[in-house]
Image 1: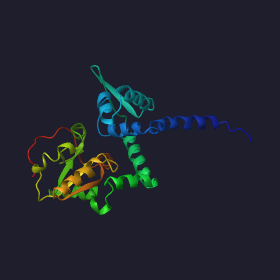
Image 2: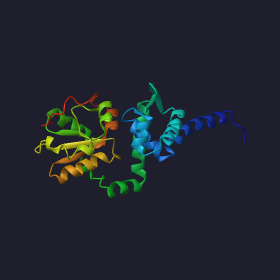
Image 3: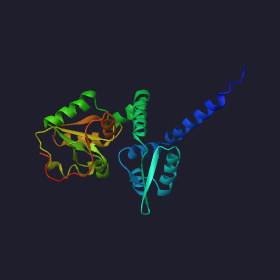
Length: 232
C-alpha cells in the first residue's frame, strides 16, 4: 500500500486531541474542571473543595493548564484558576450527558443516593423561567457563595446547603421552592430538596444546573446577594 504523505499530520492531529484526553483520564481532574466551570478559585480553595493535598491539586492543574483548558491570573502571591472558555464547560456538560446515556452505573449511583428523581420531579428551564417572571416560585441556589457571586439565575436566593436548616424560616411555606446547583450530576440540589420535603415544604430540582442555564443563554446575574431579607 502506497504511503499517504498526510498520515503523519493526521497522527499529529490526534496527538493534540489526546492532550484533552489527559485531562479527563483522572476523576479528580474532572471534578476540578467542574468546579472551575462554576467560579474562579485559588489552588488552596480547589484543594480544600476536592480533598486533595495542595501539591497534588497543583500537579493536576498543571496538566490541565498544559492542555489549555484552564487559565490563571495572579493576585499578589496567590494564583487563581478558571475555565479557559465556554467551550470547556460545554465539554464538561457533554461528558456528563454521555456518561448518563451510556453508563448504567452512573444512573444507579444517582438512584442509590436519591438524586435520580423521575422526570416529573424536575422543573425544566423554560418552566422555571416562566415561573420566575410570574413571581410564583422561590429559586434557591444551594452552591457555595463564591459560585453564586460568579453567576446565578436572575432572581435566585443564595442559600448554601449547609445553612438550609438554620434559614428555613426565611422561606414562605406557601410557595414552591426550586433548587439548583452545578448540574444533573451534582448532589447539592437533590439533598436540599430532600431536606425541604422532610420539613413539609413543596420543593423540586431544576432539570440540570447553572452551566446548562448559561449555555442556553438564559438570564444570569453576577455579584453577591443584595440583602439577607426574607425571600417571601
